[in-house]
Length: 191
Image (cartoon, rainbow, N blue to C red; front, side, top):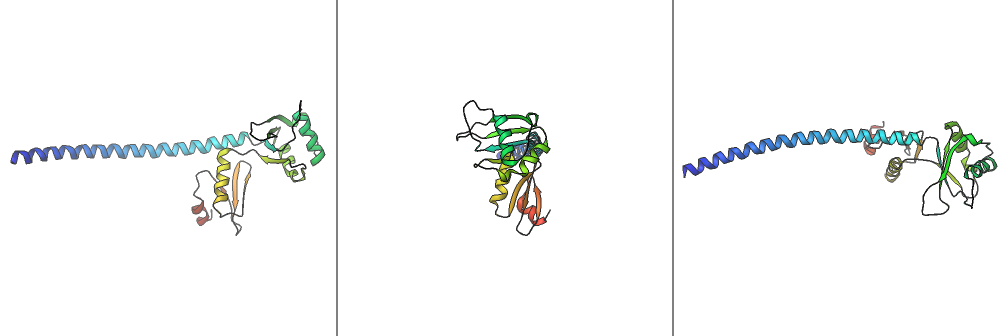
């Protein structure tokens, strides 16, 4: 009986050592996972910023009329001139094309030569006619952030400006928000 107790005690000690080794490995893996998660967040934020910055001069156009053999650049320049009273030159529009979409007419992406050209168009966009609508070309991740801010019910207004997402509360507190911000904590702290 004494031999069995000693054998069980030795086995028990052996199992304790294995548990301690596994706990040490688990701690190491958790630390590595935490570091990797942080790196992934930073990389995602950087990637989103770079993608948004590359779209900085883009305008997304909805309900732009479609016709056969259409010269989108000339039709867009003409519409901007007639509706917004802004004279654009061919060089002001770097690229223009329709996006894939289920609905017709498919939306356009218009890449302007610089932010001055885009800003001049966007400032007067409320004067557009025929249900044509101009919006900033915002990344999917930033659109998700905008939706998250709006769905929180804590903001009077949420908007995109110059590669950033902003929100204003009913009491006038206005802040810029990031992809991984804790909205409630930021509002509590007021910064």
